[in-house]
Structures are given as C-alpha cells and as structure tokens.
Image 1 (cartoon, rainbow, N blue to C red):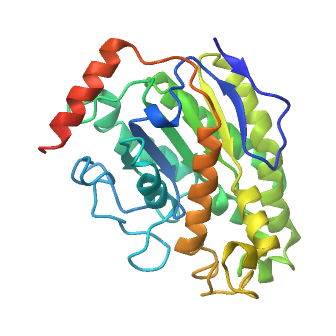
Image 2: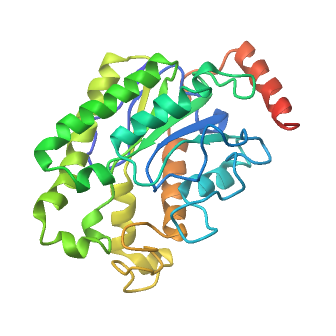
Length: 302
C-alpha cells in the first residue's frame, strides 16, 4: 500500500511517497546514479561491470571531483553500508552536466544495456534505487523564471526511467551555492543566487505531482541544502577547520565549487540516515530474492 508522507518542508529531506516496491536500505542491491560532478566517479557503459569486489565498476574511489584519490558521497556511502547491504553502483554522472546531460546519460548510457536488465545486472523494481542529483550547472545559466521549464524536463526524464521499470526514486536538492567560495562573486549577481533558491522551492511540488501520477512509485527528496547549512553554520562541531566555511582549498571546499571528501562524507552520512528511516513497504518476492542471490554469486567470478 502506498503511503503519503506528512506535509513536506522544502529544506528538509522528505519521503514524499513510499510505494510497495520500496525494500528499505538494507535490501537494496543496486544504486543507479545520474547527475553532475558532485556524483561522478568516472564510470560509463563501456566500463567493467560492477562486482562485489569492485562495486563502482571502476577502481575505488573512481575519478571524483573531490581531492585526488578521495571518494565522493557515492564511495563513502557504499563503504558505509557494505556491512549490511551489498550494493552495486551504476554511476553515469558526468562533471559539468545539466539536465540535458542527464538525458544523454539515460539515453546513451543507461538505455545502452542496463535498461535491458542483462545477465550481469538483473536489477528489478524492488531492489534498485535511482538517484538524480543535478541542477547546479543549470542554475548557473538560468534565471529564476526558467526553473519550472527545467524541472518539467527533469521529471519527464524521471518518467522515462519509470517506463523502463524503475519504481524507487531519490532526487537531491541543491546546496546553498551562495555560501561556497564561488558565492563571493554571486553576491553581486542576485539572479543566480535566487535561481538556486527557486529551484529548491519548486522541486518538491514537481516531485509531489509526479508521485501523485505514479502511486506505486517511491519518491524521496534528500536535502543537501540542509546538510550543507548544518555544517556551514557550525563547522568546528563537525571537525572542520574554523574559517573554512567559504575557503577554497580548505577542509569543506576543495575548490571554488566542489565539496571536499570530508564534506562528501557528511553528505553520505546524512543520506544513509535518511534512507534508513524509511521502512520497507513490501518484501521482495521469493523469485526476486533467489534471482538476486544467484546474480550475486555470478558477480563474484566476473
């Protein structure tokens, strides 16, 4: 039975709707990621297939936009949950991408093989979470009044994934970019700053509309805005250096716009905690379970 959530707060992580295919975090077996540099690990459809020994498909931590050789939130979370869940990651995110880039990721990467549920990735609706974190680059080149068109396009793509069999969706809102090192120049460009805020204000209404139209879908919004705000408001309480709140190359930001690996660890921590709070709605069928177990054994020898 689909369960609607309470009235959402636009700056908090929210389970807008949990459908019957949501297995709970510990039963997830696949994470499929689309987005920009905040998510990218250097994987694509021609990379080696993810395995239990190499869950990202590429050598850990992949090629990220954090410090060289350091994981982003994807790597941190996979490492954290591996004691309770064996998750394989298909991360098609690419640095610099916008919603148009996510469309290419879906049509040229995901649809190339993974959508077909090949023998090396027999994912199903009740063991897979689809994550999209995009919009930072869109907002850099969009006025606030252009946000509805962008989000319409985004949820059209979520609909494409739904049509391919996806049922569990996680969409991530945008961090407070005005508080990044690049935000120092944004203070004189109010339109750009307001575009990020408008994006977050509109994201939940669009997601709620999608959820209503797809009652068997799980629709989750993780608030990176909330995580960043919590850390930036009291950075030393979380082990970061005082004065690094807007410092390029500090403990929070590795450059003008990208979080450090330590900040990515905070993101992963909050996201994992959010997902763990969402109870499973239905256990996978015995057939799904046996097929999933068999595929894991096969993965070990690839």
